[in-house]
Image (cartoon, rainbow over all chains, first blue to last red; front, side):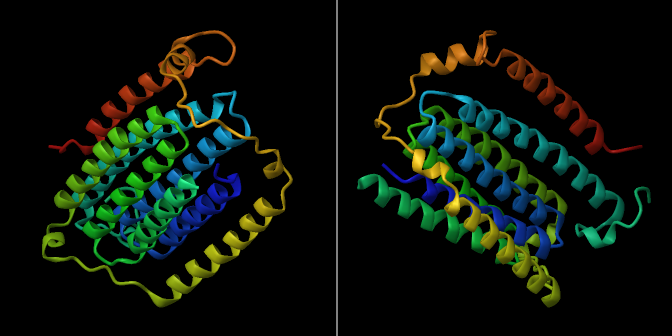
Length: 102
Length: 171
């Protein structure tokens, strides 16, 4: 059986790789990809803690399942907003968006 | 033992792809490396015997979300096909690396010092039965999840409509 701290350290590494990407990138889609990495790290934590520490329960399992669904919906809306930003500002970096309205 | 070996392979794949994903300057490559990260995380779920979760991860994330990203990249930046390059500013990279390392050190210290990891019991290598998942997902008793299930379906519908309205071309 794999010790639970392996999973926790792996997900901490993945989380902060995502945070680094979110800080250092300025492209909107690259920032969104970094957010996906962060969400995946959190999902690993939920599943591993549920399975290895409380194997009789199912809370972490369903939390992960709903988190996957919510992040899919979130990325769809974010992509729609990014397409609109590109249409209005002709650019896909966050620095170009200075007003909510053109 | 075999589990540990599989875990190490998956960890190398996940971390390597994640580092390449945030450091590459081309957006299309970043999306491709994100696909590898998602497959690796699905492999972790299979390793934890959460087969349904792994299948959901592959079908929703790797099948759905990555397709949305690829479409958006092709629609947004026409230069991507010729290899659009994003410039990285040095000060921002250093600041980001510093913040990430500080946070990583803090979180790892807290996790490894904590007492709850001693509670880990021995888990049999058995799959979580599908009937248990199904009854818990649509039951209304305690520890059953029909309300979030219905809520997330309404939420997905709202997100579809919202996405269509936002992305619609205005006359």
